[in-house]
Image (tube, rainbow, N blue to C red):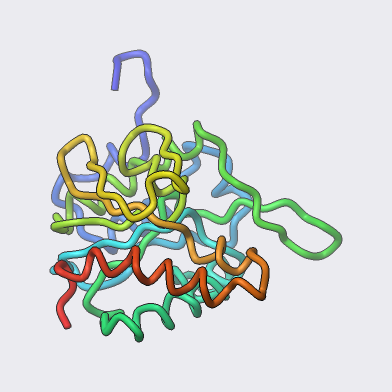
Length: 210
């Protein structure tokens, strides 16, 4: 950070700040405008000793209301995948690249709106702090926003899915689709898409305690 850049919210915390302290600070973060309109922050959850971190894109409507990651329709599909893979949810750490829900109103419905590049870059401060605190052995990027936040550059997910990339610090990052992408696909092809998604995720099995 250069001298003329404003101090980020996370820079006000001690280097050894714990997960709850980080969550509380992110709740009040207004370094980008998304947090102003969200119900609450949705920070990462899981055991601090997790070897694998799964990173989604941003909270959805249900996550924003409940305050927990992956509890909406995408989370239910992820739970199904974890069960078939034999991965205990409590053995991994689940988080998002962006910590607040960005939406646009359509009548009374809050419709998901993708975060802007600058918003992703600003919110990366919280993902960086989670990575520094947990020190996982690998991460899974679920979707383009997560892949960009982890690697620091745009990633063509459909081309790179199932491949391992790296963070700037050398952490292995497995790239695949966000579960919401499967839910948006044709219903007749959903099971086949789910099986292919499982094949992607299986490549990270070495980092998961059974």
